[in-house]
Image (tube, rainbow, N blue to C red; front, side, top):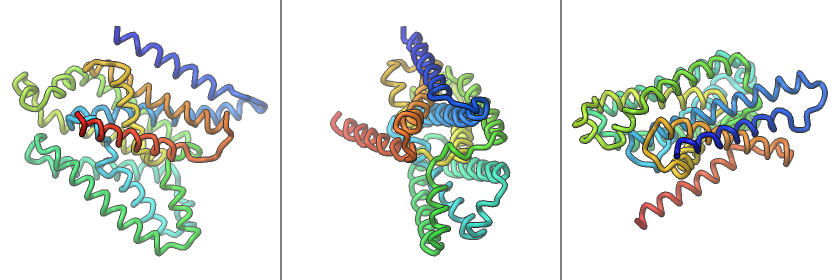
Amino acid sequence: MVKTRLIPLALLLAALCALFLLWNLRAPVSFILSLRFEKLAALLLVGAATGVATLLFQTVAQTRLLTPGIVGFDALFVFLQTTLVFTLGGIGYVTLPPFAAFLAEAAILIVAAVALFGIVLRKGASDLVRVVLTGVIFGILLRGLASFMQRILDPSEFAIVQQASFASFASVEADQLGVAALILGACVVLAMALASRLDVAALGRDTARSLGLHYDRFVLAVLALVAALVAVSTALVGPITFLGLLAASLAHALLPTHRHALLIPASGLIGAIILVAGQFIFERVLAMSSTLAVLIEFLGGLLFLMLILRRRTT
């Protein structure tokens, strides 16, 4: 049965978590375990949330080629970091309270995404293509503004912006993890509750409406969930654009089903597996300090090109 394929994924994730926590563990054990547990929690939360968000977004967008990052989440995050450094200076930026900055960034990202979806989809969810096109243009505009401000910054301030522009799991605070876990956990539970209606929505707007689903209202609700998942994840560690594409594509490949009650947990498990396994190999096995997000973006970009080329040949 397809359902039984979730069990190996869960067991693999549990084994990777144990390896991540216990590999080459030395004294002081309690202190090192606390640090590793915080990083592991961030990896699990971001991986699961990003995988689930991408699957939901692809369902309502009726395509497996897109990720929520295409709407401009990553560009908005980089623009926010650049603006803060530009206005406050390098010293002012690094002295910001981490928890307050996290809440502010998450709130801004959620409000911006919901505003974009609400304004562009005023004529109904059938106009979802405009969301994608508007998001692309919105992202290009923000990247251009951020690049302009970065050219004016001092080299030391520019280095701060560059460091903040890549996803990092080394500087996550415990209080941030608590708030993120509550929000992301609630969103995933709600997504699971909507699984049966997502199955209907995946059939298309006309078919879904003929089956009694209030399609336009439902799509807006799902997009609000996607906005919350991606915004909180991005505010917590930074942008990872193609992680969700990898997780959702692997979920569809491993579970040949259209049931979202199975695809949602599979995407979350695979997203978490990718991050935990990648961070374990980079940090524990290879002892490298490179950013894991760079490798994920490279592999995700290759997968994106492969999906486009396959679509053109079929």
